[in-house]
Length: 324
Image (cartoon, rainbow, N blue to C red; front, side):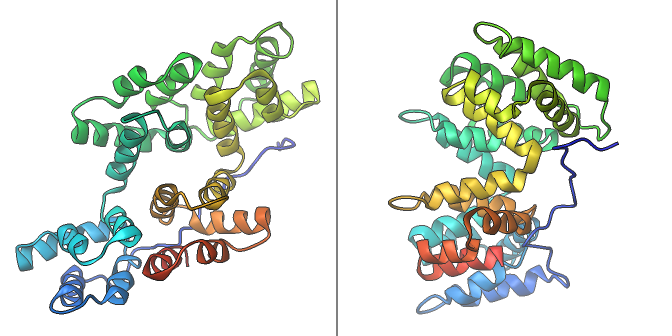
């Protein structure tokens, strides 16, 4: 049976796929030659690193150290600078480590960068969440959950702690009776009462599978005539609203969510390069092809055009190669 507003989840389309054939030794030699002597051959570096997966880049790094007794990332940092350096270092960082570092940056220092936390934690599946948590503890010697607990508050804190458990049901089937019950529970917790019972929203949105939540949202609209996202906006505000909306957005169309995030990273004065680099590096091996389609559909221009208009030089070339 199909339900109105019920999304299907096709196989995602990456833009970076494993190189085949792949020769990490030959790639290490190309990179060494590109950085040896006078001047740097940025074109050769970009050509290699943007056409290999993160896993393959780790193998190239190992070959580089084996052949030359030098650290590839250190050599790259000594040869390039600025945003290109940031992007190349991100490409060479294992994805769980990259996301753990981004979370630590968002949590530590002056003020909390809630948007980064929402983007990473509210879209992660159970496996991704477990990998991020393990990387965080390895890198920073403290648990992600403890650091979030100490740096956030209220309903937003409870949402993040729930998500950190990496305990969402990930089955594909839908129990329509449960969808009806959950929709009723959400109505009673929100628009049918004075004030909001936040714990009901938290419990359902953090534990049910995406396919089950999609059925619940459709049932909610059928019962109330209101879109569930609109209901959240009327019941919540601030960080908890952003977090819950991100979950709803991910359930409906995760590539659409990341298209929005990319647009935000490039909108207004200046570019939020940290977010742009993180999303391009992270999603290029997952669903960047779908994100490009969503971006074109939403903003009436291609993601390539947007990035080309907002960045420059080898940094631009590297980004465009990753999303090609």
